Image (cartoon, rainbow, N blue to C red; front, side, top):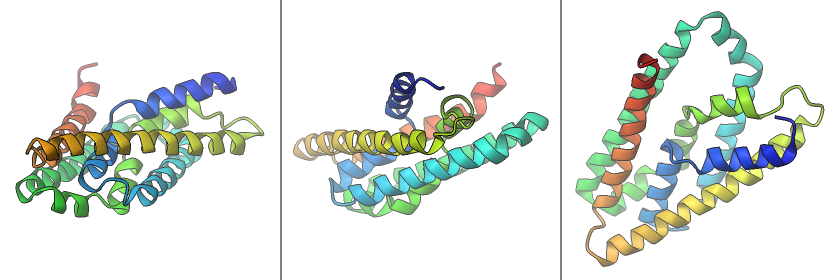
Length: 193
């Protein structure tokens, strides 16, 4: 994708789409507000950059040569996301304080590394053939930070409403349901093709 405007719009659209990382960011925002925002945003950004560049330069040729590897990777990601969902679901019984401890920079980093959006960015969005690739990656990082702030803010707002209405224990459970749905989708959608 060589047009800078189309690149920005595509990145914003993909990053804003609900997914496992955004679910974790919103859950963290609901559970602990802005307290960990900077560390979570940094973790997401580093993971996306590492994942996108690894896929773009190394994994794409391997996946093209061995298509069955894609299903194996999807299954591994689904198992990981399922375990994240299970931990969040169990945290719902303990309340919001335990959820805040569960959503760590490490968790956001690992979830983002496993996020299927990175494949789309690496294969179809980030122009690896351009001499100004670093400018595109820098723009991606800035956009990623803005969208992450928005998701944390959305979570913070919903968390405040849930707390005022006595439904704070639902926060981790809703996050768990979202991430669990993504886990199932990772495996089921390719089988339906």
